[in-house]
Picture (cartoon, rainbow, N blue to C red):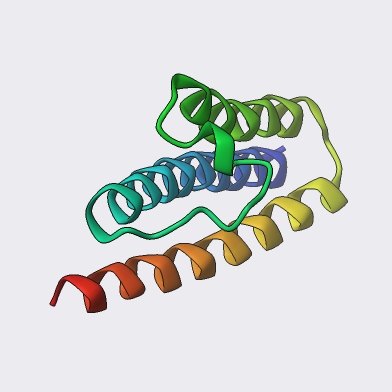
Length: 104
């Protein structure tokens, strides 16, 4: 029972981190485009940047992932979420670094 609670807590933390990284990604993308003349490289997101739909997609999809993860009780789901958070975290660090280098 304790292992189950610990696993559930870990999933919750990972889910919150994923939502946070999504918000950071959106903010950095908007900042880089508006202030630094950057472009969105994702062809699916490019037409949405600067519109409310960008927020819906960037935060809505991770929110759906969070709901799905909390309903699933699979170790594979937990590993996939951890991998997603690690990947997205790396992308976010690279993006923030690029913006900081441009601003400096």
